[in-house]
Amino acid sequence: MKQESMKVLFFIRKSRLKKNGEAPIFLRVTIHGQQDEIRIQRSVPIRLWNNAKGCSKGKDRTAVELNSYIESLTVRLYQIHKELICQEALITPKHLLIKLFSKEERRTVLGTMKKYMDDWSALIGKEYQKSTLSRYGNCYDSLQTVINEFYKKEDISFNELNGEFIDAFEMHLRIVRKLSQNTLTKYMSCFRKIIGIARDNGWLAFDPLAGKRKRLFRKEETCPTFLTLEELQRIISKDFSTTRLEHVKDFFLFCCLTGMSYIDVSTLLPVHLCRDNKGQLWIHKSRVKITAAKETCTSNVPLLAPAVAILDKYRGWNPDNPDGPCLPVPSNQKMNEYCAPVKVA
Image 1 (spheres, helix red, strand yellow):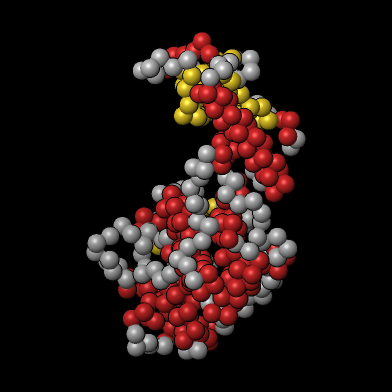
Image 2 (image 1 turned 45 degrees about the horizontal axis):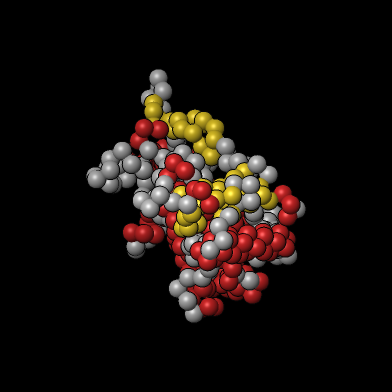
Protein backbone atom coordinates (compact mmCIF):
# COMPACT_ATOMS: atom_id res chain seq x y z
CA MET A 1 0.00 0.00 0.00
CA LYS A 2 1.47 3.37 -0.98
CA GLN A 3 1.42 6.34 1.36
CA GLU A 4 -0.28 8.45 -1.36
CA SER A 5 -3.30 6.13 -1.16
CA MET A 6 -4.26 7.78 2.14
CA LYS A 7 -6.21 11.03 2.07
CA VAL A 8 -6.51 13.31 5.10
CA LEU A 9 -9.25 15.92 5.35
CA PHE A 10 -10.11 18.40 8.11
CA PHE A 11 -13.59 19.92 7.87
CA ILE A 12 -16.28 21.58 9.99
CA ARG A 13 -19.90 20.67 10.57
CA LYS A 14 -22.11 23.75 10.45
CA SER A 15 -25.10 21.69 11.56
CA ARG A 16 -23.50 20.95 14.95
CA LEU A 17 -22.63 24.42 16.20
CA LYS A 18 -21.51 24.78 19.80
CA LYS A 19 -23.22 27.16 22.24
CA ASN A 20 -20.58 29.80 21.52
CA GLY A 21 -21.47 29.66 17.81
CA GLU A 22 -18.27 27.92 16.72
CA ALA A 23 -18.30 24.86 14.46
CA PRO A 24 -16.64 21.61 15.61
CA ILE A 25 -13.71 20.38 13.53
CA PHE A 26 -13.60 16.81 12.24
CA LEU A 27 -10.81 14.71 10.78
CA ARG A 28 -11.59 12.24 8.00
CA VAL A 29 -9.17 9.57 6.77
CA THR A 30 -9.78 7.76 3.49
CA ILE A 31 -7.86 4.70 2.29
CA HIS A 32 -8.81 3.06 -1.02
CA GLY A 33 -12.41 4.30 -0.73
CA GLN A 34 -12.82 3.20 2.89
CA GLN A 35 -13.19 6.11 5.30
CA ASP A 36 -13.67 6.96 8.95
CA GLU A 37 -13.84 10.23 10.82
CA ILE A 38 -13.52 11.62 14.32
CA ARG A 39 -14.08 14.91 16.09
CA ILE A 40 -10.74 16.43 17.14
CA GLN A 41 -12.12 18.37 20.14
CA ARG A 42 -11.39 21.73 18.55
CA SER A 43 -13.76 24.33 17.11
CA VAL A 44 -13.51 27.47 15.00
CA PRO A 45 -15.76 30.39 13.99
CA ILE A 46 -17.36 29.51 10.65
CA ARG A 47 -16.13 32.75 9.03
CA LEU A 48 -12.51 31.86 9.88
CA TRP A 49 -12.49 28.37 8.37
CA ASN A 50 -10.74 27.75 5.05
CA ASN A 51 -12.49 24.77 3.45
CA ALA A 52 -9.96 24.41 0.64
CA LYS A 53 -6.92 24.22 2.93
CA GLY A 54 -8.62 22.57 5.92
CA CYS A 55 -7.35 25.11 8.44
CA SER A 56 -8.13 28.44 10.06
CA LYS A 57 -7.49 31.60 8.06
CA GLY A 58 -7.26 33.70 11.20
CA LYS A 59 -4.07 35.51 12.19
CA ASP A 60 -4.39 35.65 15.97
CA ARG A 61 -2.69 33.37 18.47
CA THR A 62 -5.70 31.04 18.76
CA ALA A 63 -5.76 30.46 15.00
CA VAL A 64 -2.01 29.86 14.85
CA GLU A 65 -2.20 27.30 17.68
CA LEU A 66 -5.15 25.57 15.99
CA ASN A 67 -3.32 25.31 12.66
CA SER A 68 -0.21 24.03 14.42
CA TYR A 69 -2.32 21.33 16.09
CA ILE A 70 -3.93 20.34 12.78
CA GLU A 71 -0.50 20.14 11.15
CA SER A 72 0.85 17.98 14.00
CA LEU A 73 -2.08 15.57 13.61
CA THR A 74 -1.42 15.31 9.87
CA VAL A 75 2.29 14.63 10.36
CA ARG A 76 1.59 12.04 13.06
CA LEU A 77 -1.01 10.31 10.87
CA TYR A 78 1.49 9.81 8.06
CA GLN A 79 4.09 8.59 10.55
CA ILE A 80 1.69 5.97 11.89
CA HIS A 81 0.72 5.02 8.35
CA LYS A 82 4.38 4.54 7.40
CA GLU A 83 5.08 2.47 10.54
CA LEU A 84 2.17 0.15 9.79
CA ILE A 85 3.35 -0.31 6.22
CA CYS A 86 6.82 -1.29 7.47
CA GLN A 87 5.23 -3.73 9.94
CA GLU A 88 3.00 -5.17 7.19
CA ALA A 89 0.12 -4.67 9.59
CA LEU A 90 -3.55 -4.19 8.81
CA ILE A 91 -4.18 -0.56 7.80
CA THR A 92 -7.69 0.87 8.03
CA PRO A 93 -8.92 4.43 8.65
CA LYS A 94 -10.43 3.39 11.97
CA HIS A 95 -7.22 1.76 13.14
CA LEU A 96 -5.18 4.84 12.19
CA LEU A 97 -7.50 7.18 14.10
CA ILE A 98 -7.45 4.94 17.17
CA LYS A 99 -3.66 4.97 17.19
CA LEU A 100 -3.52 8.70 16.51
CA PHE A 101 -5.54 9.61 19.58
CA SER A 102 -4.13 6.83 21.77
CA LYS A 103 -7.57 5.43 22.52
CA GLU A 104 -6.57 1.90 21.68
CA GLU A 105 -7.50 -0.60 24.34
CA ARG A 106 -4.77 -2.83 25.66
CA ARG A 107 -5.67 -5.99 23.83
CA THR A 108 -4.47 -8.99 25.78
CA VAL A 109 -4.10 -12.62 24.75
CA LEU A 110 -6.19 -14.23 27.49
CA GLY A 111 -8.70 -11.37 27.63
CA THR A 112 -9.37 -11.64 23.90
CA MET A 113 -9.55 -15.42 23.99
CA LYS A 114 -12.03 -15.33 26.89
CA LYS A 115 -14.24 -12.80 25.09
CA TYR A 116 -14.42 -14.85 21.91
CA MET A 117 -15.01 -18.09 23.83
CA ASP A 118 -17.95 -16.43 25.57
CA ASP A 119 -19.30 -15.31 22.19
CA TRP A 120 -18.84 -18.76 20.66
CA SER A 121 -20.61 -20.49 23.55
CA ALA A 122 -23.87 -19.06 22.23
CA LEU A 123 -23.23 -20.86 18.92
CA ILE A 124 -22.80 -24.38 20.34
CA GLY A 125 -24.79 -26.79 18.21
CA LYS A 126 -24.92 -24.29 15.35
CA GLU A 127 -21.43 -23.25 14.27
CA TYR A 128 -19.41 -24.81 17.09
CA GLN A 129 -19.37 -28.18 18.82
CA LYS A 130 -19.22 -28.36 22.61
CA SER A 131 -16.04 -30.42 22.31
CA THR A 132 -14.42 -27.66 20.23
CA LEU A 133 -15.17 -25.05 22.87
CA SER A 134 -13.87 -27.42 25.54
CA ARG A 135 -10.58 -27.67 23.64
CA TYR A 136 -10.34 -23.88 23.53
CA GLY A 137 -10.90 -23.90 27.29
CA ASN A 138 -8.04 -26.35 27.80
CA CYS A 139 -5.82 -24.28 25.51
CA TYR A 140 -6.73 -21.18 27.53
CA ASP A 141 -5.74 -22.89 30.79
CA SER A 142 -2.39 -23.94 29.34
CA LEU A 143 -1.70 -20.46 27.97
CA GLN A 144 -2.56 -18.97 31.35
CA THR A 145 -0.07 -21.28 33.07
CA VAL A 146 2.74 -20.52 30.63
CA ILE A 147 2.12 -16.76 30.69
CA ASN A 148 2.31 -16.83 34.48
CA GLU A 149 5.55 -18.83 34.43
CA PHE A 150 7.22 -17.16 31.44
CA TYR A 151 6.26 -13.51 31.97
CA LYS A 152 5.33 -13.58 35.69
CA LYS A 153 2.08 -11.86 34.70
CA GLU A 154 -1.59 -12.72 34.72
CA ASP A 155 -1.98 -11.68 31.07
CA ILE A 156 0.05 -10.08 28.27
CA SER A 157 -0.61 -7.87 25.27
CA PHE A 158 -0.33 -9.44 21.82
CA ASN A 159 2.80 -7.47 21.00
CA GLU A 160 4.60 -9.19 23.91
CA LEU A 161 4.36 -12.53 22.13
CA ASN A 162 7.61 -13.82 20.70
CA GLY A 163 9.27 -16.99 19.46
CA GLU A 164 10.59 -17.90 22.91
CA PHE A 165 7.09 -17.86 24.34
CA ILE A 166 5.81 -20.07 21.51
CA ASP A 167 8.60 -22.55 22.28
CA ALA A 168 7.74 -22.48 26.00
CA PHE A 169 4.07 -23.08 25.21
CA GLU A 170 4.98 -26.00 22.95
CA MET A 171 7.18 -27.59 25.65
CA HIS A 172 4.39 -27.19 28.20
CA LEU A 173 1.97 -29.05 25.94
CA ARG A 174 4.46 -31.80 25.12
CA ILE A 175 6.09 -32.34 28.53
CA VAL A 176 3.62 -31.16 31.18
CA ARG A 177 0.37 -31.94 29.38
CA LYS A 178 1.96 -34.92 27.59
CA LEU A 179 0.00 -34.29 24.42
CA SER A 180 0.58 -36.29 21.27
CA GLN A 181 1.66 -34.47 18.12
CA ASN A 182 -1.85 -34.53 16.66
CA THR A 183 -3.49 -33.25 19.86
CA LEU A 184 -0.82 -30.57 20.17
CA THR A 185 -1.66 -29.48 16.63
CA LYS A 186 -5.30 -29.01 17.65
CA TYR A 187 -4.31 -26.85 20.63
CA MET A 188 -1.97 -24.78 18.46
CA SER A 189 -4.79 -24.32 15.96
CA CYS A 190 -6.87 -22.76 18.75
CA PHE A 191 -4.00 -20.41 19.54
CA ARG A 192 -3.51 -19.64 15.84
CA LYS A 193 -7.18 -18.67 15.59
CA ILE A 194 -6.77 -16.06 18.33
CA ILE A 195 -3.56 -14.76 16.75
CA GLY A 196 -5.42 -14.48 13.43
CA ILE A 197 -8.16 -12.43 15.10
CA ALA A 198 -5.53 -10.11 16.58
CA ARG A 199 -3.78 -9.64 13.23
CA ASP A 200 -7.05 -9.04 11.37
CA ASN A 201 -7.94 -6.29 13.87
CA GLY A 202 -4.52 -4.69 13.74
CA TRP A 203 -3.64 -5.56 17.35
CA LEU A 204 -0.61 -7.59 16.31
CA ALA A 205 1.87 -6.45 13.69
CA PHE A 206 3.65 -9.78 13.13
CA ASP A 207 3.02 -13.51 13.20
CA PRO A 208 4.75 -15.11 16.23
CA LEU A 209 4.15 -18.55 14.69
CA ALA A 210 6.14 -17.72 11.57
CA GLY A 211 8.90 -20.24 10.96
CA LYS A 212 7.37 -22.75 13.36
CA ARG A 213 4.26 -23.83 11.46
CA LYS A 214 5.83 -26.87 9.82
CA ARG A 215 6.73 -28.32 13.22
CA LEU A 216 3.69 -27.22 15.20
CA PHE A 217 1.05 -28.13 12.63
CA ARG A 218 2.53 -31.38 11.35
CA LYS A 219 0.03 -34.21 11.60
CA GLU A 220 1.21 -37.75 12.14
CA GLU A 221 -0.38 -40.70 10.40
CA THR A 222 -2.15 -42.94 12.87
CA CYS A 223 -2.71 -46.66 12.52
CA PRO A 224 -5.76 -47.65 14.56
CA THR A 225 -5.80 -51.11 16.10
CA PHE A 226 -8.87 -53.22 16.71
CA LEU A 227 -9.99 -55.25 19.68
CA THR A 228 -10.46 -58.96 19.28
CA LEU A 229 -13.67 -60.54 20.52
CA GLU A 230 -11.72 -62.02 23.44
CA GLU A 231 -10.33 -58.59 24.42
CA LEU A 232 -13.75 -57.00 24.16
CA GLN A 233 -15.28 -59.75 26.33
CA ARG A 234 -12.55 -59.26 28.91
CA ILE A 235 -13.46 -55.56 29.24
CA ILE A 236 -17.18 -56.37 29.43
CA SER A 237 -16.66 -58.81 32.30
CA LYS A 238 -14.29 -56.52 34.23
CA ASP A 239 -15.72 -54.78 37.32
CA PHE A 240 -14.21 -51.50 38.43
CA SER A 241 -14.23 -50.21 41.99
CA THR A 242 -14.91 -46.57 41.08
CA THR A 243 -17.98 -45.10 39.43
CA ARG A 244 -15.97 -42.92 37.08
CA LEU A 245 -14.09 -45.91 35.64
CA GLU A 246 -17.33 -47.85 35.29
CA HIS A 247 -18.82 -44.94 33.35
CA VAL A 248 -15.78 -44.77 31.08
CA LYS A 249 -15.88 -48.52 30.51
CA ASP A 250 -19.55 -48.45 29.51
CA PHE A 251 -19.06 -45.39 27.32
CA PHE A 252 -16.09 -47.04 25.59
CA LEU A 253 -17.99 -50.30 25.09
CA PHE A 254 -20.97 -48.47 23.62
CA CYS A 255 -18.63 -46.84 21.08
CA CYS A 256 -17.20 -50.27 20.21
CA LEU A 257 -20.61 -51.90 19.88
CA THR A 258 -22.06 -49.18 17.66
CA GLY A 259 -19.00 -48.01 15.71
CA MET A 260 -19.79 -44.46 16.78
CA SER A 261 -17.22 -41.84 17.74
CA TYR A 262 -16.86 -40.11 21.08
CA ILE A 263 -18.61 -36.97 19.85
CA ASP A 264 -21.53 -38.95 18.39
CA VAL A 265 -22.12 -40.98 21.56
CA SER A 266 -21.69 -37.92 23.80
CA THR A 267 -24.51 -36.19 21.89
CA LEU A 268 -26.80 -39.23 21.76
CA LEU A 269 -30.26 -38.26 23.08
CA PRO A 270 -33.42 -40.32 23.72
CA VAL A 271 -34.99 -38.65 20.69
CA HIS A 272 -32.41 -40.42 18.49
CA LEU A 273 -33.67 -43.88 19.52
CA CYS A 274 -36.44 -45.58 17.57
CA ARG A 275 -37.78 -49.09 16.89
CA ASP A 276 -38.55 -50.71 13.55
CA ASN A 277 -41.59 -52.86 12.74
CA LYS A 278 -39.92 -55.90 14.33
CA GLY A 279 -39.18 -54.10 17.58
CA GLN A 280 -35.44 -53.76 16.87
CA LEU A 281 -33.96 -50.68 18.54
CA TRP A 282 -32.04 -48.33 16.24
CA ILE A 283 -30.10 -45.10 16.50
CA HIS A 284 -31.16 -42.53 13.92
CA LYS A 285 -29.11 -39.33 14.13
CA SER A 286 -26.79 -36.97 12.34
CA ARG A 287 -23.15 -37.91 12.81
CA VAL A 288 -19.99 -35.90 12.33
CA LYS A 289 -17.92 -36.94 9.31
CA ILE A 290 -14.18 -36.64 9.91
CA THR A 291 -13.38 -34.13 7.20
CA ALA A 292 -11.72 -30.73 7.20
CA ALA A 293 -15.16 -29.12 7.29
CA LYS A 294 -16.56 -31.60 9.83
CA GLU A 295 -19.64 -32.24 7.73
CA THR A 296 -22.57 -34.24 9.03
CA CYS A 297 -24.45 -37.19 7.63
CA THR A 298 -27.47 -39.10 8.86
CA SER A 299 -26.84 -42.69 9.98
CA ASN A 300 -29.04 -45.57 11.05
CA VAL A 301 -27.29 -47.85 13.53
CA PRO A 302 -28.89 -51.11 14.77
CA LEU A 303 -28.26 -51.77 18.46
CA LEU A 304 -26.95 -55.14 19.61
CA ALA A 305 -28.20 -56.62 22.88
CA PRO A 306 -25.08 -55.55 24.90
CA ALA A 307 -25.48 -51.96 23.67
CA VAL A 308 -29.17 -51.97 24.61
CA ALA A 309 -28.19 -53.27 28.06
CA ILE A 310 -25.88 -50.29 28.54
CA LEU A 311 -28.66 -47.88 27.60
CA ASP A 312 -31.03 -49.64 30.01
CA LYS A 313 -28.41 -49.40 32.76
CA TYR A 314 -28.30 -45.62 32.49
CA ARG A 315 -31.94 -44.92 31.73
CA GLY A 316 -33.00 -41.99 33.90
CA TRP A 317 -29.45 -41.43 35.17
CA ASN A 318 -30.01 -37.66 35.12
CA PRO A 319 -33.54 -36.89 36.41
CA ASP A 320 -32.86 -33.15 36.12
CA ASN A 321 -32.46 -33.51 32.35
CA PRO A 322 -34.44 -36.56 31.15
CA ASP A 323 -34.15 -35.45 27.51
CA GLY A 324 -30.38 -35.00 27.79
CA PRO A 325 -27.53 -37.40 26.87
CA CYS A 326 -28.34 -41.10 27.16
CA LEU A 327 -25.03 -41.81 28.89
CA PRO A 328 -22.88 -39.93 31.42
CA VAL A 329 -20.41 -37.99 29.30
CA PRO A 330 -16.83 -37.64 30.54
CA SER A 331 -14.78 -34.94 28.84
CA ASN A 332 -12.64 -36.14 25.96
CA GLN A 333 -9.55 -35.39 28.04
CA LYS A 334 -10.83 -37.40 31.02
CA MET A 335 -11.97 -40.15 28.68
CA ASN A 336 -8.43 -40.59 27.37
CA GLU A 337 -6.98 -40.39 30.88
CA TYR A 338 -9.35 -42.92 32.42
CA CYS A 339 -9.16 -45.29 29.47
CA ALA A 340 -5.66 -46.32 30.57
CA PRO A 341 -6.83 -48.56 33.44
CA VAL A 342 -9.72 -49.79 31.28
CA LYS A 343 -7.31 -50.87 28.52
CA VAL A 344 -5.23 -52.97 30.93
CA ALA A 345 -8.31 -54.80 32.10
